[in-house]
Each structure stands twice: as structure tokens, then as C-alpha cells.
Image: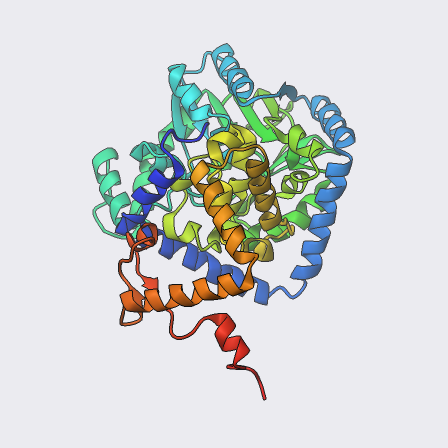
Length: 471
């Protein structure tokens, strides 16, 4: 999937103008933040677990070729068929060809951001194959004709009131009571027969276990298990960075993933798939395929400034705590992955020239790195993209001119001090009740929210006078 053709500024403007979107974002991210904090308070070993998780991922990155070959060898030994895809288009083509080979009329999918990354929903639709999203949030996204707006809660851009209306219009036997439980029952009734009549199931993988060739999937709804068992073919699509050496390493990372994503100790379901159905098995697929996707990951491996991003375990904590994401949600980022991790990854997939605004959509307050369960230096990686954009001449002339003016002023302390003093005085003139509702030069800010008016003198003036210092 490629970045939306609308500019980042246009997408952000649409998002900031939507009060219902802000309500939906606040509900979800606020809950996620509180639950994560409670989970970490009850898990004092988190820092040690975080350090171990980082070392596991760094070890795999350092020995990528070894673990990739080990995984392939053991997966084939288990009866799986392994496919390699260097690009998103190639990965989608492999999956669609497998579905056609199986003469599939209907496929069921488990939520997978890798599937979104390679454009699989669109590829299946274009091939005329009925696609049924079985994750409740993805079901909402499919009914709305949307894209996921969060990697853990794909439909977080919808309020429960909006979802209720969608279900009443689309479901054969919709709910009559306005409760979450009634809406879940409505979705269950709608999807049940589709689970059982699908020809092919498609899932992602949270981890790839090198020593057994197994894949690991975690969910909270049980839809993954019901999706992957009845059909005669199961296809797993996974990025190659999902590798771990063995089961204990997967569980070490699961302790971080679940607490960081949902604030729970464990997910409701943790499932391992290892090859097709064996003689004597009561259920399971007759064919088991694994599509290993590169799509820029080896490029990240080769670049010192990006390889730390391969540690990402897709928990979403960075976006739940990002002050920018919490204002405009995920669609404004345009690509598959939103938030700070998306601002690092999207230029890899879609090119920096098309996405150079994303690394700038960050205050660099460092909160994303602070909450990252594998300590990815996201602010540093974002600054790296900014540096590259500047060096490659991608920044617009207005930006370069503005930075030139700022450099000239900032390198002359007397001029900077004078300019800051004048700016503070001017801003106070436009302030009412401590807020600035409009002011020349602040239009991009005050169009959707007020700007805090300065309370007094400049920071430098207050510091020079000793104001606020401890005696």
C-alpha cells in the first residue's frame, strides 16, 4: 500500500477538523495509556525484560542470514511451503496465485499489518476473490471502506455510535440493544458461517521461530484460530524481521508486547502453527504456505541509521503516547503504519521525496522512545530522515529560506534576544484570557485550536533575573 495522494498537511487538516475523530482517539489512546501504566506498575521486572528483549532482537539482526535459513529449513521439514518475496507486489501476487490454485471463492483474513503493507486486501478484491475480515475491528474497517488507523485498534477512528449504525445497516440480524456486547453478538452472527465456508485462510505472524519453523500469532478474540482451522489452505504472510531463535525468546518478547500494546499480562489466545494437518489430526489445513516478505527490510539492515527499527514488535505504544498522533489519528500519516514508527518506516516503503513531511510531524519530546519496549531511538531515526531530506535538497525553498533567517538570528545572541522580546510583546497583544485565537503567522496553529499566550517575559530574561531559581 502506498501513501495517500493527498498531502500530509491536507490529511492532517481534515483530521483536525473532525470533532468525532478526536473523541474516538481520546477514548482509545487514553485507555491504552492508563492500562499500560498499570501493567508496568504490577511488573517491576519490566526494565530487565526490556533490556533482554532488545538484546534478543539485536542478536537476530546481527545473524539474520543464519536464522532465516534455519527457519526455512525447519518450516519445510514440518511440511510447510516457503515462498520469498522481495517486494510488496511480489508478495501479493504469490498469495493471489495460491488462492487461484486452490480455486478459492472466499478467503478469510486475520488482522495483519503486513497484509496491509503489501496491499493484500486490494489485490484480493481486484482478483475477484471474496475477502472476509474476521477481526472485529477489521470487520468494521471493511464495512466502512476505510483503512486501518492504528496497528492494534484498526477502527479506533470510529466511535461506538458510528459502529452501531454501520452494523444495523450491514448485518442480516443486527443488534437491538445499544451495548458493546450486543454489537459483538451481531458481528458474530454475521461472520460465523463465513468462517466455516472459506476455502483459504490468510494470517500474519507475530513471531517466526527459527528452531522449529513454526509461526506464532496472538489475538484476543479467537478469530485467528477459527479462521485458520477449517479452510483447506492456510497462508501466512510475515516480514522477515519477525524472526526469533526459539520459543523461550518468543515468550520473552510476548511479555513486552502484550503489556505495551493492551496493558494485559497475556493475550487471550497465543497460537503456534507448524506445518499442515498431520495424519490423525481432526482439523487443520491440508496445505500450509509461508510468504516471507523483505520489502525494504534488508535495505534497513544495511543502513546503520535504520537497522534499529527492525527491533520493532508492533505494539503501538509509541503512537498511544505521541502528542501528534493523539491530535489527528492514524489516517493523516497516509501510509500503512502511523505514529512515530510509521514516520520512520513509511519513507523506507514509499520513498523520502513522497513522505518527507512525516519525520517533521514530531515534537522530538522523546516519549516514544521512553515507552518503546525494545528501546528504539525513534527521535534519533526521525532526525536522520530530516537530515537526509535537507542534504538531498528535498526541503522546499521557503523552508530553506526560513532556516537561513533563523540561523542568521540565532547565531547573533543580541539579535535573537531582541527578536524574542518583540515576539513575546506582540503575542501578548493578541492574547485574550491566556489564549491566542488568531494572529498573523500563527494561522496553521490557531485554525483548529488556541495558542497559549506568553505569561510574562522571555525565558532568557527570566533566567537572567534569577526568577524561579532555588535559594
